[in-house]
Image (cartoon, rainbow, N blue to C red; front, side):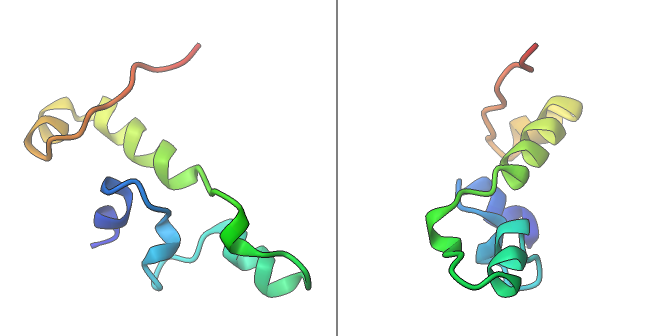
Length: 69
């Protein structure tokens, strides 16, 4: 279920059960608009998982990017 938010390119914040760092910061700091920031942690997590398990990534039709150095 949480993976669904990662796969479609949206932030993990689309799933209320998984608040991101930006959402937490917006709740604590007045003036921070969470909609103006992109939390890349979810993107990185599924990219790493797709690289770690290429067969699963292929079954889910994920296009993993090669690791950056």
